[in-house]
Length: 234
Image (cartoon, rainbow, N blue to C red):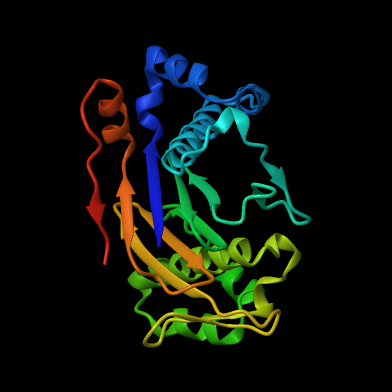
């Protein structure tokens, strides 16, 4: 089982809202927010911290008391806690976090920034590139981002990160989504969906059972004494 949390950083354009959440995140997150020069990056970093706090809270953990470290390839984890796994991603004006009881990775991409087919030809495996070319021209960008987010989520779930070249494993979109890989003996399960102008993917080491998604607007409302709203995703 896993849960996805998401936050739209447009809410943080309000200085009062920004400061409110800035004061609620950990000291280390505030330092990270402060390290960015661009306001866009500050908001994305703060949003990631807010989602991390909320996910840990629902797991019965307090963010300020949990030590988060990075693995060899930069993946964050909770040392000594093998029942809570998480991952964070952000793009443009949206941040997401996934919490699971198994190793997990997530990725979100703003689909209006299509880099063109050259990137896929150079870095994707041949099967993936052929899949994109088979699509109608107007659908090629969507196909690219489906593959990109699924590949990124696998890199993060597996813990290899950017150390593993993108053409060393292959995502198949024919029928059930699966990853063809020989980098380890583990089995991975992937899920994806489109949310407006964003493409989102999640990768887990176990079968996907259920999902709960929460948006920032609901989260802000919760701070105003209104309950979270939850929606299921099949």
